[in-house]
Amino acid sequence: MAVSFGDRVIDFNTRLHYRGELPDGFRVMNPYLDNPETMQVMRQFYHKYYNDHHQRRFIIGINPSRHGAGVTGVPFTDTKRLKDVCGIEMTSVHTHEVSSVFMYDMIASYGGAAAFYKRFYINSPFPLAIVRATKDGRWLNANYYDDPVLFGMVKDFMIDSLKKHMELGLDTSRVFVLGKKNADFISRLNAEAGLFGHLEVLEHPRYIQQYKSKEKQLYIDKYIAALSH
Image (cartoon, rainbow, N blue to C red; front, side, top):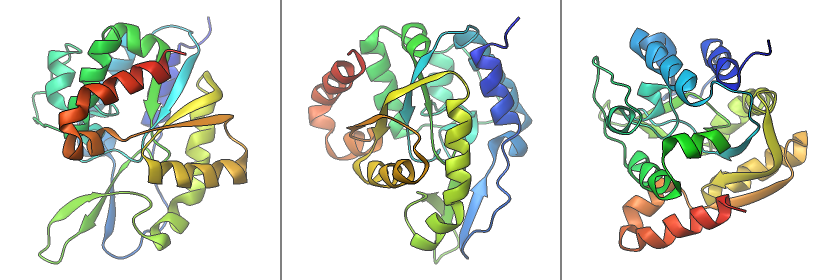
């Protein structure tokens, strides 16, 4: 019997390891190596929602945050929504991530997690969390495009990761890219590697939650409209 979509994702995540260089002051966090429970809950999630052979459409983020997929292993999913919406509890850590709030409000409007994940797969061109050191020694979320040297170092890994995502069983004739700046870089990768058909750009959930919260329902409606045709 053919391997399920979910088992392909689990295999991809299990093998994830960034071995390339990074500029000074940047670090990559691999939740699957850092916390054994992450591997457990990630497996539960993909077995619950992706244990089939349906073709799905691809929603492309930037790179995981250290409070979302950087902990749970599930894109745009903090531990709160992993438990409350998906019914999967993490006991070793508890996180709240603003992008996850918007994404799961949108998923609820779409028809719920089961209906949404049956049609869509979310991941990022750089599928591991990137953090950057501050002057006072703290580590904050970073995006792969924040530094041109960083982007140059991770670009080949990103193209390889996107190609592996495509092999999962995705409809890549039209993909959804979250974040306008992210879309600029994905367009460059697409031009170089010929990965996708049409790129449809949607505002990033973090941007909506932080700067457009009063208009949140308008953005939820925009997402639903785009994803429904």
